[in-house]
Length: 282
Image (cartoon, rainbow, N blue to C red; front, side, top):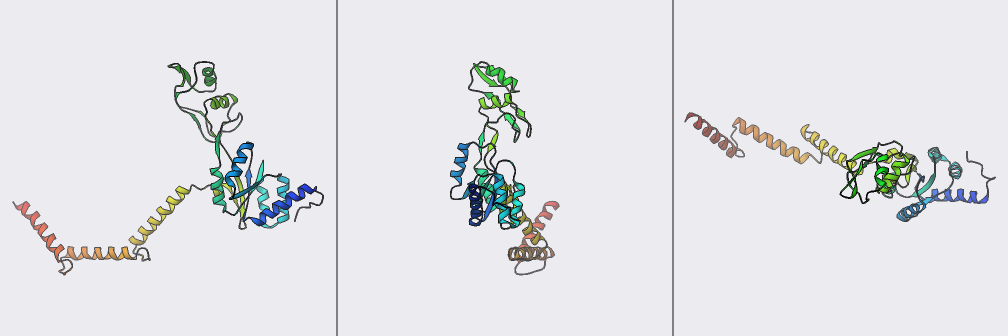
């Protein structure tokens, strides 16, 4: 049932009407997580998406109102609302949208309390720092630092925090000073409604190169199966005929059945066998 909105102030009603209008204008409506994205980067993302998708930041409650009024399967999108959600509209399919949003992500310094998205590794080698308190700060953060040739140096490559572990303040400060930016910041597609179906992000995260390679491998295996099992198709008919002719020729040659097509091969085989026999006798 549509949510009752008569009691809402005009600006909220207008916002709900705009969401409904955009849902009719575009083929896809999606939810994106805006948490932790600086305002400057949001502007960059808008600029990168211009002409491809429209981003609209609004309150989760208003999104729920709008989805309720639109009705149908799109209401299921409301169950995916989480945290600092915003809406995104596009005429692209959800897989293309996911790929586009992944390309808008940039690397940023870690903040205390954030979870490492992957293992964070500090590589060995010299830094640009001169000897000073920075050595102790790095060591306290678990980074093996020392002074060599008048500069602060990381003595060995080390994984300073594992994927999923919390980043401490000391480590976050140390990584920032070393210009290590482990955090991917950008729009995270939570879910998308397209042609009557809600797609979640884990379904959309496809490695396009690996997917393409899998298709090529499957095509090769299907071709070989058809060829080896002698199943004729429009793609394998020519190769099957070539294989059959080659195998028939080999049978005729091995059986020494005289034929104008294989006479040269039979004589060549006989000569080869005679020469082999001669070498043994001598």
